[in-house]
Image (cartoon, rainbow, N blue to C red):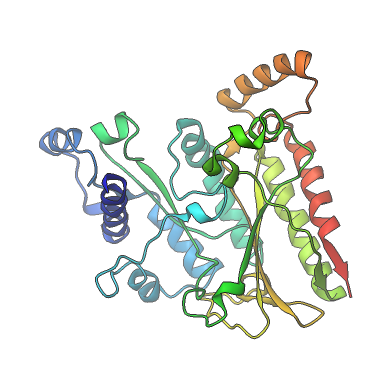
Length: 328
């Protein structure tokens, strides 16, 4: 009950933050005092709104009225949902090394990349909301103070008569060492922990030659960009839906965003690359590398995805994607 109330309060804070004009927001001593003792309903404002306006309007051709309307409650229920069902990918950045990398190193290059490559397979990040004040909720880790707003690539599933046939996969290279998977028997690992491990796709993506060539070019360009920013541990989130399903995609109708028909006529595919907030050069990742290397002296396990080099991770990621594809 407490967790549900906290989640509901956070959703309301994010929805209000998206509509709040940051230029009119003024920090005050009284506001700081009131905010400090706040646990759940923290005040949030948009970060770099002009940058995200450019992305939404120029790169992705999103209608601003439709975008704002998507945050308003429907039948008393808030439309925002945490993206916990997207495997590793959440809607908040609770750890400092993640949001500091996103703000200082990643955001401006991301905007440039997405504007120059509008058919990119990287997930659309449409807003970034943060708390302008230090609060007890953020200080003690009870309420994250940094949130990204991403496109919902599962949009339309709840209204689809064949929604039970939708399949989702959060895919990462399987050759890395995961302590939860490789050290402990399944009986000792919680179901929640297992659910956060990368999935396996035991099938193939059936693509025409033209669709394959466009997709492969986009994946290579996107992962080169991620390598240049020193990002690792990202994943390919794949959604496979029945060919007869036709969920509505907002904005630019790029193939993998709108739904790409499979070459064998059985499916439509949606795919995005996401969860690219672990930077190899950040202190936490460097510290983890030392821990893993020390452990490997004894355990002789391979590198972890979060401690490998950006170039090696890219090569393994591309190999994984290439192995999934059949050209019909």
